[in-house]
Length: 214
Image (spheres, rainbow, N blue to C red):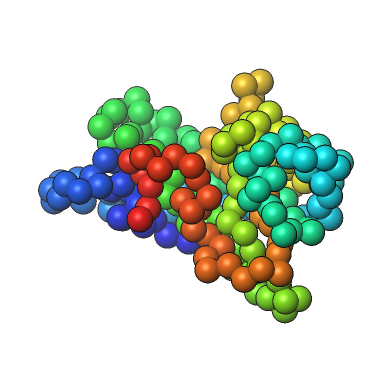
């Protein structure tokens, strides 16, 4: 688990511009601080997937109406429900930084976003190995809030995985995760070979997104 400097720069809008030494130094400082503060945890559960109707999916008692997710999980008979968090200490660092320096806080937020993605990617590696042993491949993570996959399903993931008790992950009334640097997602298991199970931008329809890879 580590912070990807290039990804942080993309988050900060340096898609084509060259960053100066000061911003690079700030990124390094923030990255070091967050990596020391993080107390990462994750939880997962593999469940059967069914399709009771067109553009409708059912897994672990959760019924999802989503054309985008239906297409994303085409060819999958099982899915992995996944949740991860960097922990409350990271939120405390972000809050403190916001009070002291907004410019540094922007960099800190970008570093934290990169760190949670890096942690999730690392968590997927053993899942991929176990799937490979069964002749299966992973689809990229797909989270509530992507496309037409309602963010309200955050609550379902937290309940099924018992996240509040097991990894200290909860949710606000507006469906925002707490701690904030956390992720819930569904990962499809398929017999169809995939080129990359962590290439999240491949599954996103925001083609003009400034943070897009590739």
